[in-house]
Image 1 (spheres, helix red, strand yellow):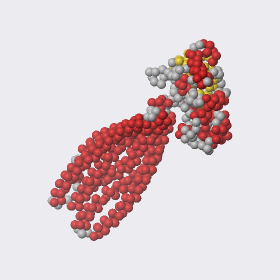
Image 2 (cartoon, helix red, strand yellow):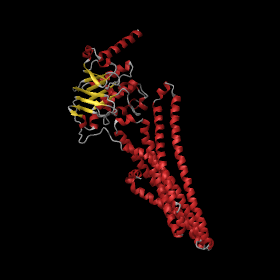
Image 3 (tube, one colour):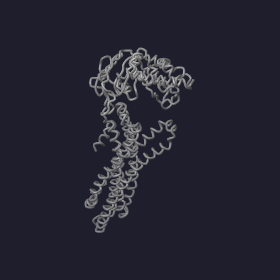
Image 4 (cartoon, one colour):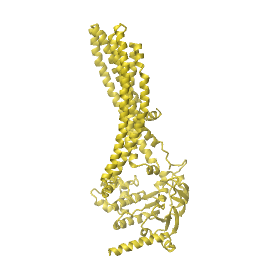
Length: 582
């Protein structure tokens, strides 16, 4: 109930429409509840007493009742669906906004498909609890209450007999409702797994086809699909058991009413019309109870989805603005790491006691074996994660003293895997600074060596790039990414293997753009190709989460340590390749 009430709080902004819809639902249900009384008058006064005026009254009343009932039903359906759609849009927007604010650790621990399922499947399932089932709940409840009042008026003894079955029905609904809710949760989890496999397969068609793993992916999808089927079938079994059991208990009550009421009519204690009306109301009770059982089952299933949605909404934002955080002013570009420790998991350290100072405008290369902690440094500076111990400073101040938004506005990143959106070239560059003019966008593209190839595209800057920029080459994607970073104009720049996936010609063009981008900025360059960072002001060599060497290219070669070892390996490999080609 607590969970359901929380879901209903989203109805509050639309409470006037919701109340009007419920009033209309009550009127429509009241019309349904009035019909058995018409049957009573038809039997007792028209058929038995031959009252033609009553017949005319009944005919007119049926037309009037159904006309009112039709208008009320339309208003109730329209208003509740309006409210429901608005509520679902609000919840979906809030969940999406929450996901945007969550720390990178959330995305590390959750599959993309599952995250998508929160916004689509789970929020969609909540609509049943907040719209369709609320309307049915109000309608059936009004019919139930009206029927009870009329039954009491007709014969209180028969009513008590009828109600003798009620506790059993309520108990059964309660027990099965809990089971159905557990099954509903498993259905949502299984649906999320199906969505996850689908997303992964659709996102990586080239990899799947290159390894000839179509059948493997089909089998993987079928396994999750079957698990989803099993979860749904378990729910169906429980729901299918609930309805006939309630019907059987209700039928027992109707049977007793028939026996007792039939004798009452024979003895003259009850009219035939009253018995027929009472039986109709008894059916009107059994049907709402039966439907309420199904509605409660559906609500329980929907609440399982609501629980998943609210679990996401309640997640703590691990990396957040500290109390009193201020906007980061203009940045000179001095960066300092002081005794920094960090681990993605509590029992695993990726960085251990890392300290270094970078002067404004310096180009610093981070090198070392895979897993040494280079990319982690790049993730800590814009606070994608917070350090476990130690401090990171910009211009002498702890970065946690500033708002996340203002900190990240001053840090630009050009990653190895370029992330482009399914929009135009212009929109993808404009993403760097949304208030930029057309002239500024084109200037950024020229600085990134991208302007000429963009003009050669079918629609120039208005060319659609497709999902993840599949319509252009890797080098072109990277140059658009660099143009986006140039437009942002950050004070601190992070280049994370920005040219490692490119061919020699593309690398040369992109490197020219990067060199132009780094001028006047503090730049961190992560590179495995050591030939690309020989001119860096400083080179920090990482091994097992610690800085083991620090200096420029010539100094580190002279030390004949890890850097010299890595450089000599690459140099030997390059000479070997050139000899083979010649």
